[in-house]
Structures are given as structure tokens and as C-alpha cells.
Length: 466
Image (tube, rainbow, N blue to C red; front, side):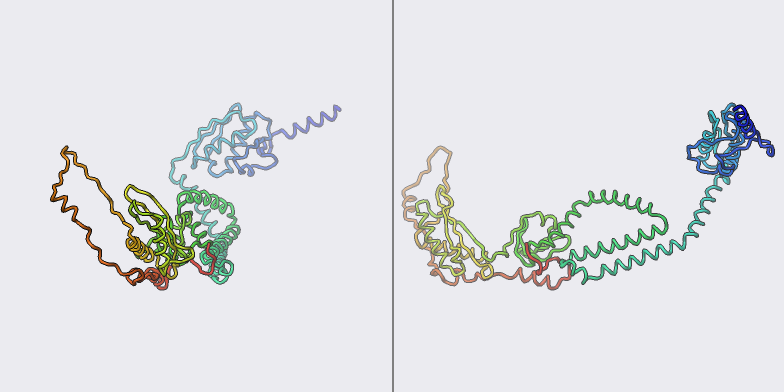
């Protein structure tokens, strides 16, 4: 056992002696030589020395060898005293000051580091690293130029393929019969194919990480833009839904919210109406999609109503009977549903009666029919002795003295008679309801505009109506 321990002690003594050839301790990082000290400076591994820990000369020699091999730290001066390393000199880059300190702290046996390095103010010394880096970048670009050319060619090929697929209108028309959705699908396919080409090109250049960063930034930016253009996106989605579930056809007479008119077209942004006075009305599709839509054209049968007042002393039941009989005699009023009437209100000086009737809108104009029916019923009630009273006003004089009417005035009032009304033509005369035909002025204007316009229109008669 003593022989074994003695042998180990001799070996330790041999390996710990200075290098006779150089006169200094033999230094190394692990088992590597001094050139390996140019490795990454941000590693936290301890830099070992071959001399026993605490040898200032060994620390000094090791650091000098390391700094001599690192660009930018060649001029660093080192002094070691009791494990405290003092760095001095000048460096070209501000980051080199902290880099030198971090390297010194990793050396085994270093207690503290006094960093007195400063940045060199010499212009040439400061420009040299920048010029070197620029030259390296230029060399890298020159070396990567063939790959860049191939990457751009790949992107161009995929762009051409995507554009060709997007222009295949017949293909997307078979996929989706709706033209608006077909264009949307074609645009999506073009973007996806182009994106695939970009991914392949970046993978060829070894820059897929850049693509991830770009997509992440695009997602954040897209979210912000989405909030900013929320109404625009809402309008676009509403356009898609309206094109799929069409609530009206071209030239339908509709009421959308508070707006009435005939439909001219439906595009990707708005619904265009022509009002009954011939003006264009543009309603955003998000409002159309959310609005209550009344379509008069869908059902050909439409009801009209009106009210007439009779004297408070008259029989409202008889007035309803006579008025209903008159409406049944009108040729444009439908028998099924049958016309009718009802007592609406009893006022101070009159009784209000509401009459209702139905017409076929494909043959009769609603406004003309209602006007003719009012005139016919009014004349019938008057012929049967019903009074259609006018408003009565009571006048009071607050002067204190009553209004005096002389005998001559009373006599004149008593003899005053209601002027005779000129005899009306008999019921059924052509002047009563001579023309109740459907008015086609607005319909013809809408048809003319649709025939002469090449604007976008998503209305499709081949699709079912909601």
C-alpha cells in the first residue's frame, strides 16, 4: 500500500511541474489547447488551469493566451494579485469590455475582477470591426446568391400556379354555384399556394425561423387590424351570407328597415334599391342582413285598408254593410279573401269605420286600387244618407258679454241651406276606378339599369330564395 501511494504522489508531482520548454505553466481548457479559448464567451463552464488553484502566474498566463486569440481583445492587459484580476487597455467595441470580464471570472482561482478597460476612441480602430462585419455580410450574400435565385424562382413558380388555379373560373363555378363564393375560394387558393412556395423557399435558405416570426407578427397585426375594421369585416361576412341565403330577387318591392324600394342589385358591399320616387338607395349589407325585410312581391295577394268617419247618429253596422257591398262590386277587389269592415273608434262627433280589401298585385296597382276604393265607398255612403261630418269647433268669448244674434241674423241663418252637390256619375262609371292597372315605371327603370350595367351582382335566380 505504501508503494502504491508513493507512486501516485510521484505522478502528481510530474504532471504539476512547469513546462520546461516554455518556462511557463502548461495551460488548457479541459483537454484543449490555447486556441480553443476562442469558444463561446457566454458559456458558464469554469476555465481550468493545469497549475494548482491560486497560482497568480498561471491565471495571468492563461488569460493572456485567451485574450490573444480573441478578436477585439488582443490589446487587453492582465495583472493578477492574490486571485484579483485587473484588466486594462482599450477595446474597439463596448461589448468587449464585459466580454473580457466574463472570461476572467470563469478562470479557476479568480476571486474578483477589476475591469479598467475602456473603449478606444480611435476612428480607424472603431471602424475596422464594422468594415469587417460588412465584408463578411457581403461575402455571405455573394455565396448565397445562387440559393437566393433558386428561392425566388420557386416563389415565382408557385405564384404562377396559384394565379392559374384562381383563373380557372369553370372549376370554382362547379365547386360553388355562387359567383361571390367562387371568387372567394379562388382567391384563398391563390394565397395558400403562394404561401407554400414562400415556405419552401425559406426552408431552402434556412430561414424558417424568420417565417415563424413573420407569421407571429402578422397574427398580432391582423388582430389589431381586425378590431380596427370590425365593421368592414362584418359587412363582408354579411355579404357572403346574403349571397348564400338570398332574401329577395332583382326588381322585388321590399321594405328594409325604414327604406322602401325595388331591388336593383346586391354586390359585395351594399344592396342597391330604387325608391318609388326613382332615386338610388345604397344600404350596407351588414344593415340589410340584420334588418327586418318586408317583401311585397313574394305574395301576389296584398291587402289595403282605409278609414272613413260617419255621423255619430248614423248606424255603423249599416255603414259597414253598405261599404262592404260596394267594395265587392269593384272588379279589382278579390272575393277570397273577401272585403270587410269593422268599427274602429267612437269619437265625440263621429264614428270611425275601417274598411279592408284584397287585390292581386300582378294585375292591380295597390295605390290606385286603394284610392279608387276610398272614393267608391265614400260616394256609396253619401248616396245612402250617411253623413261624413267635418270637425266641429266650439268658440268661447271670455269678454264677459254673451254673443248677441239679431233677428235678421237668425232669420238669415235659418234660411241658409247647404249648397247642392253636383250629381255624381253612377257607381261603376269609368271615372270611379277607370285605371287600376299595375304601374311599371319603376320596374322598367330597374330592368333598364340592370340590362345596361356591368356592375357586380350576386343575385342569382338559380338559387333558392330564403
